[in-house]
Length: 566
Image (cartoon, rainbow, N blue to C red):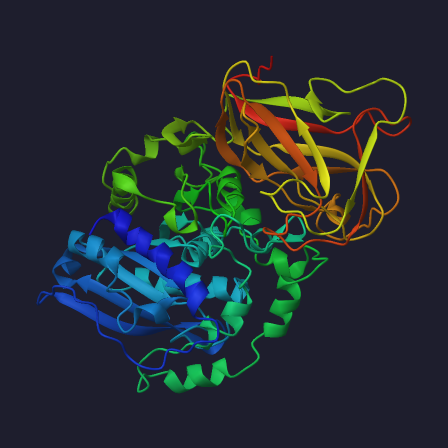
């Protein structure tokens, strides 16, 4: 089986789980995987001691004929293993890599399936349990002491959470987080706005977290009722296990970025990463938004060979496709990257992988998916900012309107706007036609000067590509709870006065064609994508407001040169 198929199944299983297992409990064994065996194949179940006197269930599949030369381990630390009963390590990744002399390990996240304890929603106990599993695997007599972690969605998130422990886990030599969360706050909220559904792949979203885990995955048990710790898992799963706190934090109209979320932020600890990184994400991921990948990559430092100190990871790569959450990796290009990545980091082979990329990104146009290109860094080093100012009459122009008078537009927000329909409650702006194509890679920034009538109101701007016939395609979208315009630590109501609110839109790699226009929809709800805020009046500065501002503007990240308009 190809590596593409292996990783695709990891992601598909995670997605199917979030749809099908809310409240479900796996109660009996299913048919085993049909895998050709040899006399040297070993399949074992172990229980690894961890924090709070709990244990983590680990299943290992390996070919013992490689034991004498020592085997590296490829680990997935997952809450989804009830979908793979009864032998979770006999999966597609194992089928690919066990014959090559790697041991395959799959472990149940703390508080799920065969592991005791309580599900920790990505918190410190879950992080420590991942560290304990890696160290235990590295210490087996048949192991070469090197462990990699791989997985998609939650399974990629656990790879990043363990890597964030840095020097505490030197045995972790490589991670492959695919569509993984790097900051749980950012998974639930877009700058304070609660994500909910989407209009592209409605089943591919994350509103069921934490509910689907507190009352679903965290209640499943391994399908071996005579197992060593079966009674312990049943007892632990009957406990409340922090579900009330998870719900209060995960579904909040005014979500402060507090201690709870800081404990679940691995991006803030990116400077501590020491394992080599091959990160993959889909530009069209509507579940774990693409920013979770791009911002983690940007924050991870690379070690400088010229110094004695270790400042970061040995190398890092980022692979970005136009896939969605369950399609972040595909094709022979990814297969080759992954195989060479593991050979280099776990076996020490010279594969050239450390000198590739390090950014490989697939673009998109109004006509569809484009080609892959490589770059030296992210944001792309050749990125320039093109700034356009909002003008009365719906224009986007190169400079602010400094003429006299109050240049103020307004609308009444009712919480009913959707991205695809004609704008119901909001304002629409467009640029002149492009003289030549403009490639946008990264996040546009809407620097809004606004006045709103109520607290807990939002801005949800949408950047669009306007074709000559007037049809539009969304380039990227943004979300901001206006009470968090000055930071996420605490909400500061913006009621009744002019305030600056910068909305950083979710990043994309998109080329706008020659003759097309760039458009901006200014609205306060995008109800197919997020829970709306309060209704009320919204005023937007389209030019100079005496003694207040020169107006509102849009900055777009264009590659190579600034956008050229007719």
